[in-house]
Length: 184
Image 1 (cartoon, rainbow, N blue to C red):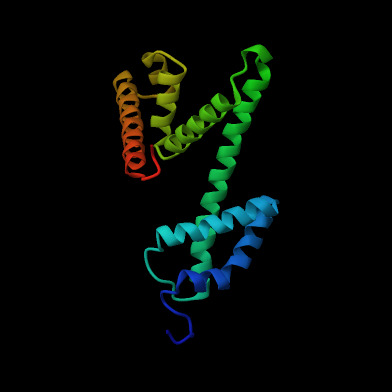
Image 2 (cartoon, helix red, strand yellow; image 1 turned 90 degrees about the vertical axis):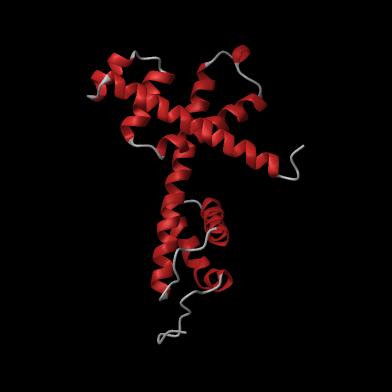
């Protein structure tokens, strides 16, 4: 123990008992929803189990700062997922009922959109925008280049980089699924 009586590397159980209520309250104030706050607080501690903090905590304040930072990122991810979901639901609502995809197909598309959204958020903004404009919206490279103030060659490079990243992400997911003993 350090002089303040706080373990420098507290166990997850200790962190949970000392900070879960506080984190849940902080999230509830931030999100305005008790159920979402409880889910994200739970997920934050699950993340700590799977990927511990890079260094120990010297005080309860350091632990809370780390948890708050992690929870802030989780809130942003939740809001992005909800924006994507709402955009998809708006698109579905605008379609004639006879053309609407099945519930299963809707779930698959929504999951794919969320994965793409997460991948694009991890990219530099110009790379993500170039990919969306050129590959998704089919805007010619010269027009994308003019809009983003880059060369057409850079547009092609960005699109290739994003496509490579998508393929690597898919390969990693496939490899993970193949290692899963429940995968049949």
